[in-house]
Amino acid sequence: MTGRDIICIIIAYLLGGICTGYYLIRFKTGQDIRELGSGGVGARNVGRILGKPGFIITLTGDALKGSIAILLARQFAIAEPVVSLVLVAVIAGHIWPLFLQFRGGRGIATAIGSYSAYSPELALILLVITLGMMIFRRGFILSGLSAFLLLPLVAWALKFPGYTVAALAGASVIILFAHRERLRKAFAEVAPQGEA
Image (cartoon, rainbow, N blue to C red; front, side, top):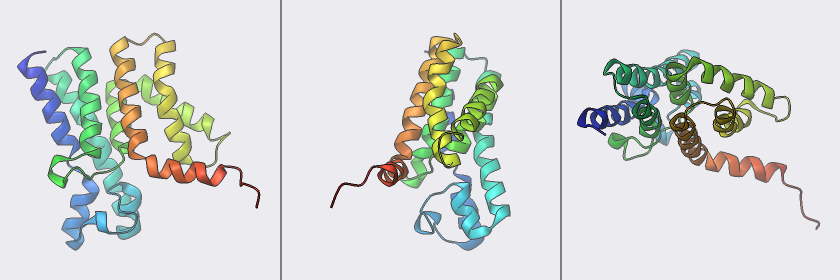
């Protein structure tokens, strides 16, 4: 790995750390969004505070930075295995932003943006799996998380390069980790109740 590769990965991480919702709420209200609503810096929580425009701006901003990280990496003509590390780095930066004491978002919008730039085919597969899972599960979030979990297996079955499969697996792990509380509550709700 060259110095340029390492710089691209670091830039992607720092770019991921620019959490749109945090700075939008700070600019609009002077408050820390992590102390408001659900405590998340993502579009849903921003939407609760600023309405639909805040939701759209945050969703777009977080997705764009994921795409920009991939496009910049390819502009620097770094090797594709390193581009796959950039994908993981920008998502990790959003979840654990350096300048926000590692308290960021959950990475969904940033992942979608980075997947779209990395491989539109993968982004489409992710969407198809999500919609398919919604037939069997209630709720878009759980279906989407299931899709993130399944995507590396689908990529492997479709013979994507090993570094791509590994990057997708790594991204899935950190996204699921970021959603661990939500997943715990969801599974607690569907677990069979014990006898009194």
